[in-house]
Length: 203
Image (tube, rainbow, N blue to C red):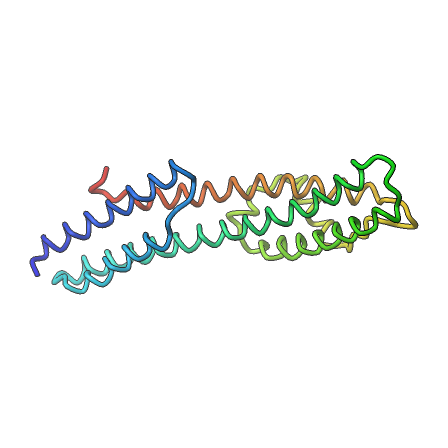
């Protein structure tokens, strides 16, 4: 196969992927990862037809970097969905406990239990982010301090039939801030993906 033709075909394919991602971002802030990854993999397979091995190596490296970035964004979007479920569980329990007029501790106990379950899930989620510097680097000192405290203790939320206000306030502040910061982090990862989709021939 003619090298020039092969390179042009690869360039066209990557340009199409870039356009696909841009359209997806503009439409609904989601990326069709399966299609994009398939297209990049198809380009990787066709690189084997190139006679210029040095050029082929560079193209393979770039294609694999794109695939890795797809997987990274996909992973964090799945995590964001999981975090959203945790936030809903915690916020719902807190709203019932403090927003229901005349609710007794007895009737509120199931919601304290729901709050504890959501809290356990949140602890597991936050522990999974320990080594994710692209996420944790955006945490402000106050939020970092709150999270450190939260991960160091077993919040009980109810002590001798009295709500532990400081614990409830802390977990409320944490979930609100973490969700905002996490969504912002995903936007940065997506931005990096878009930048990777802009090869020299597309500028």
